[in-house]
Length: 449
Image 1 (tube, one colour):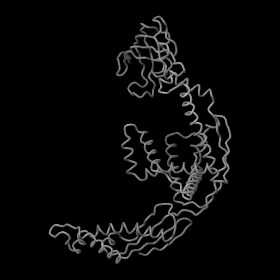
Image 2 (tube, rainbow, N blue to C red; image 1 turned 120 degrees about the vertical axis):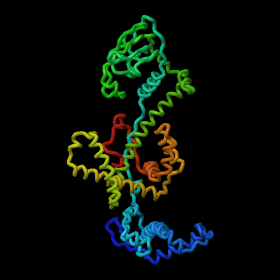
Image 3 (tube, rainbow, N blue to C red; image 1 turned 45 degrees about the horizontal axis):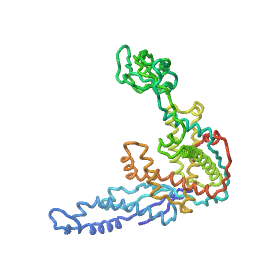
Image 4 (cartoon, rainbow, N blue to C red; image 1 turned 120 degrees about the horizontal axis):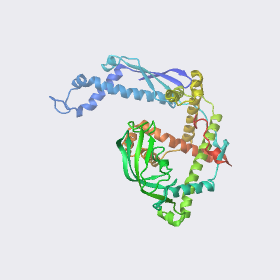
């Protein structure tokens, strides 16, 4: 086997690789002798099939397997001899006629191209200074969350028979919906409780129940929205013949220990603490997101090195594909859609370069500091992903288990977050209290953009 480095351009490498026909034949002969003892063919005793017969019957297929293995072996040898770290999978370009190679008439000759990882020294995290915005959940937001919880658990009590329905009341009705005098499928119900103002019925339906009382039989006229999910009803005028059975007034529960115990907790204080922790968790996540963005900005400023062109091209192509999809769907604002294409491409290529650079920096920091992902962390992420598809959890898990690329995409954000946590622990981070609006304001670009 001959391996020659034939071209070096920045981080791109090309290797010429050649395996002589004689060496291929030697490997073929060795492989045939290896499988002969297990060979079973009609007309021959077990293990006694002549090598010449095996070569005649299966020589080309065996040689194909050998060539595939040799390509992988020679690629690995070229990488190890050059003492480089690949930044991409090798791209193989055959120069031999494969039919001649498989028949033993020609050398195996090809060239292999790959990008290699740049050599650089990551910045010392102790020299990074960033400001982390923080905020505490205000008391009124906690009270509002508790009030919403109370409203979700509101009970309704019957009003007097002569009482007229008000906004917020639940009106128990029987109804039949008709279009052009004909009842339509799904338009009838009995003893249906409709909460006025809840917005759960067709627009305009609930409002027309204000003022009704038990025993009333009003007609409610509505128009189905043009985008109504049932196409045969979308945009149609309908009349609902209604009979009011009862009007019920809301009775929100009192915020006390009894209410908390009804939710499975010990006391109202425990409920309030739980709600506070949940809300504060959202604030803390927003704080971390802002700190991460500023950390990545600082890392980007501190690193300037050549990037593997293939990685940048791949990242740019993904960004550009998404841009074109958004543009085709009409989801871009007018200013962005009207921009010169070359100008947009230049901006997105800068974003692609930033993402690749930061990805390499984080990966190198993780490697040098031996940051690892545990199998338990991967399994937790896999379970969380599967739960996004109720009823298909098993298929989702099997998909990831059978697709290494998908599993790698699942592992990548876990690893990134662990490296970011390491950096935030070792950088000089100063907390600054900010208003809620500032904490939750969206950044102009994605974190790695």
